[in-house]
Image 1 (tube, rainbow, N blue to C red):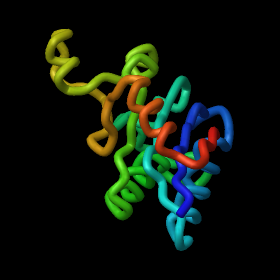
Image 2 (image 1 turned 60 degrees about the vertical axis):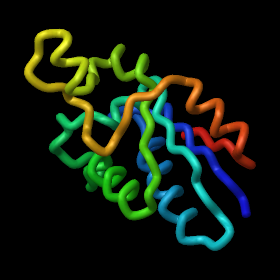
Image 3 (image 1 turned 135 degrees about the vertical axis):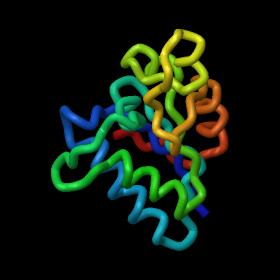
Length: 130
């Protein structure tokens, strides 16, 4: 069995990387003897986790599609907490601490540190960056 970590550094808006990662991950999970142990959004990829995205980009709403993917295959969608905060994406908990009513982190994603990426990379056969 091959174990993969998927690292997404592409923005929803400026390249096809995020969409390619999504399509690849879907195809990979349909194959036997392949498993994704972590999908990690870093740098501009953190923008994939905002709940403020309502429009479709290139025909699909990737934020919602990632959410459905994570539920179907029981894979957690991890976002680097620092990358998210630099791009204005915050959880409800952090929003309340800052005096806002709600955050804008999509409920299907979780904020984590880079240590989470490193730990899963050590348990992976392949790291693929999009």
